[in-house]
Length: 137
Image 1 (tube, rainbow, N blue to C red):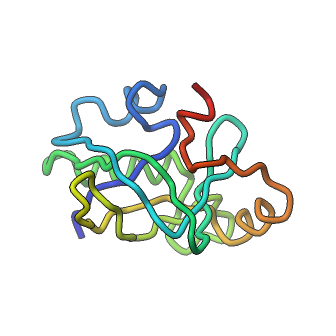
Image 2 (image 1 turned 120 degrees about the vertical axis):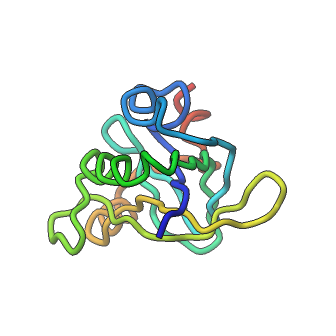
């Protein structure tokens, strides 16, 4: 499945991982909104946690077709995601993300793995408004 990526933290334009991972690998980048999730502050990066009624602000990133597989692997490594891995901090899931024109597109989103999400819900620091850049600007 070749779908865009929804990024909301260090992969956003202007953040350090954007240049390291996305530069010259993307065909398009546009604002997006993920509903049904909230953001928690992590150690230098945020976690999206699935939560009804929440909204996360970020960017929809469409990879260049020839760079898609390489980028998918690179982002999985960055997020330390291994399909089915018991020690994952993040899970990569397909979710609907709203574009600026109000239409929805299916995109890959890295969300906090269940054990991490449970810890964050119990004692994490919620990022009000779901916008990591605004919270760290």
